[in-house]
Image (cartoon, rainbow, N blue to C red; front, side, top):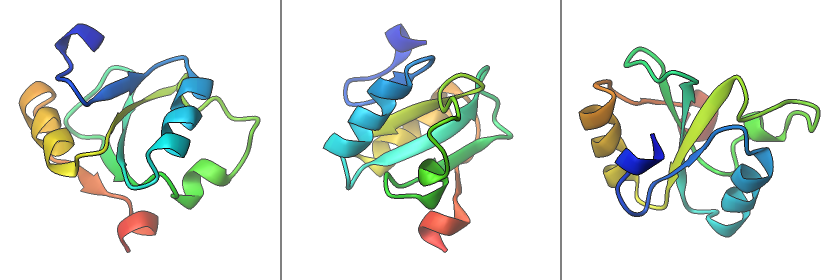
Length: 96
Protein backbone atom coordinates (compact mmCIF):
# COMPACT_ATOMS: atom_id res chain seq x y z
CA UNK A 1 0.00 0.00 0.00
CA UNK A 2 2.79 2.47 0.85
CA UNK A 3 4.31 2.25 -2.63
CA UNK A 4 1.03 3.44 -4.12
CA UNK A 5 0.72 6.49 -1.90
CA UNK A 6 1.46 9.89 -3.41
CA UNK A 7 3.88 12.23 -1.72
CA UNK A 8 2.34 13.91 1.33
CA UNK A 9 0.11 10.97 2.31
CA UNK A 10 1.29 8.62 5.04
CA UNK A 11 -0.13 5.24 6.01
CA UNK A 12 0.10 3.90 9.55
CA UNK A 13 -0.36 0.15 9.95
CA UNK A 14 0.85 -1.59 13.13
CA UNK A 15 2.55 1.70 14.10
CA UNK A 16 0.69 3.49 16.89
CA UNK A 17 3.79 5.46 17.93
CA UNK A 18 4.30 6.73 14.39
CA UNK A 19 0.64 7.62 14.07
CA UNK A 20 0.56 9.65 17.29
CA UNK A 21 3.84 11.35 16.38
CA UNK A 22 2.25 12.36 13.05
CA UNK A 23 -0.79 13.77 14.89
CA UNK A 24 1.53 15.84 17.11
CA UNK A 25 3.46 17.22 14.12
CA UNK A 26 0.32 17.94 12.06
CA UNK A 27 -2.37 19.46 14.31
CA UNK A 28 -4.06 20.99 11.25
CA UNK A 29 -3.94 17.76 9.22
CA UNK A 30 -6.48 15.10 8.29
CA UNK A 31 -6.79 11.38 8.99
CA UNK A 32 -8.82 8.76 7.17
CA UNK A 33 -9.65 5.78 9.35
CA UNK A 34 -10.05 2.65 7.27
CA UNK A 35 -10.49 -1.05 7.76
CA UNK A 36 -7.22 -2.94 7.55
CA UNK A 37 -8.15 -3.96 4.02
CA UNK A 38 -9.59 -0.60 2.84
CA UNK A 39 -13.12 -0.72 1.45
CA UNK A 40 -15.16 2.07 -0.15
CA UNK A 41 -17.88 1.59 2.47
CA UNK A 42 -15.73 2.61 5.47
CA UNK A 43 -13.56 5.70 5.06
CA UNK A 44 -13.99 8.13 7.96
CA UNK A 45 -12.26 11.52 7.95
CA UNK A 46 -10.95 12.84 11.26
CA UNK A 47 -8.92 15.78 12.54
CA UNK A 48 -5.85 15.14 14.74
CA UNK A 49 -7.63 16.55 17.80
CA UNK A 50 -10.59 14.17 17.48
CA UNK A 51 -11.83 12.92 20.87
CA UNK A 52 -11.89 9.38 19.44
CA UNK A 53 -8.07 9.40 19.46
CA UNK A 54 -7.95 10.39 23.13
CA UNK A 55 -10.05 7.60 24.63
CA UNK A 56 -7.46 5.05 25.80
CA UNK A 57 -3.77 4.27 25.56
CA UNK A 58 -4.60 0.56 25.84
CA UNK A 59 -6.13 0.48 22.36
CA UNK A 60 -4.13 -0.54 19.32
CA UNK A 61 -5.03 2.29 16.97
CA UNK A 62 -3.29 0.97 13.87
CA UNK A 63 -3.76 -2.77 14.34
CA UNK A 64 -7.43 -3.47 13.59
CA UNK A 65 -7.78 -0.33 11.50
CA UNK A 66 -5.23 1.65 9.53
CA UNK A 67 -4.81 5.39 9.17
CA UNK A 68 -4.06 7.44 6.06
CA UNK A 69 -2.84 10.92 6.98
CA UNK A 70 -2.11 14.13 5.12
CA UNK A 71 -1.89 17.85 5.81
CA UNK A 72 -3.99 18.35 2.64
CA UNK A 73 -7.65 17.33 2.90
CA UNK A 74 -8.38 17.62 -0.83
CA UNK A 75 -5.38 15.49 -1.78
CA UNK A 76 -6.30 12.86 0.81
CA UNK A 77 -9.93 12.65 -0.32
CA UNK A 78 -8.95 12.59 -4.01
CA UNK A 79 -6.48 9.78 -3.36
CA UNK A 80 -9.11 7.77 -1.43
CA UNK A 81 -11.64 8.17 -4.24
CA UNK A 82 -9.13 7.08 -6.89
CA UNK A 83 -7.32 4.32 -4.98
CA UNK A 84 -10.12 2.85 -2.86
CA UNK A 85 -13.15 4.02 -4.77
CA UNK A 86 -15.13 5.41 -1.92
CA UNK A 87 -16.44 8.67 -0.62
CA UNK A 88 -14.97 9.86 2.64
CA UNK A 89 -17.49 10.38 5.44
CA UNK A 90 -16.61 13.15 7.94
CA UNK A 91 -16.52 12.18 11.62
CA UNK A 92 -19.41 13.79 13.49
CA UNK A 93 -17.18 14.64 16.45
CA UNK A 94 -14.61 16.43 14.28
CA UNK A 95 -16.89 18.10 11.76
CA UNK A 96 -20.21 18.10 13.72
